[in-house]
Image (cartoon, rainbow over all chains, first blue to last red; front, side, top):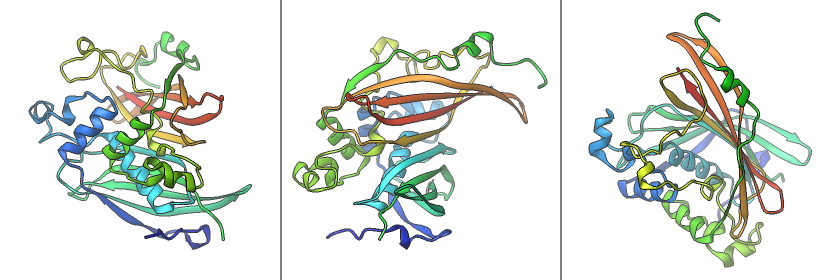
Length: 143
Length: 163
């Protein structure tokens, strides 16, 4: 099925971005530790994570960043481009729980040939806490 | 500003100085394994035939892959109890703790298999603010990623908060 392209003209300030849910598992955390050469034990060794005061292993901050990146690129694909993303990790997200991404349009403008949209984005854990907060700038095609 | 500054003269002298450039190659297999690890199976990252027909004209890496090829390997004896290597932060700030305070990445060109990506890091700024429980020092790190043609691919800025 071909994905429907979203255009600059379709976007209004205050619009909500369709949310995206990831369900990270322990296996996924292990795969991300391996590919990003992140050897921090709090991501794969739950006994050790408890020693650091966590109930179990934690979803990596940069994996949440990768989720947020995909949240944007899936929304704007195939012809939109992610130009900028910013995020900071504010809380803990755990495997075997949903990780829910949401966003809102903050602004739109045309700079030269580029049709730019500014978004506020965040990721929530199962408890509904905003565990990653950030922003993104995307370039969208124009009709 | 009350109290002593956390920022030493030595730290101040590091502002603006670039680190040693590191160049690593982008491998198609690494892109593919990254995509499976993060769960992003967009064919422009994984399927040469489909990627050829896309506006990219071939396989590209997802934007958030930008720092993966340059991740530094460590030997087992460099790792501390927590699995992290020693001395991640070489900024001589007079503080007991440092935590990550956020990241901002700007993308200029997609990375492609076969690209040779050079990363150059520097400290852009170090400044202090009075927090509720004392002085906080903010260190802004920047990594610039360029490809084999000298084109800027991505710029990342990270904030370290020390107290």
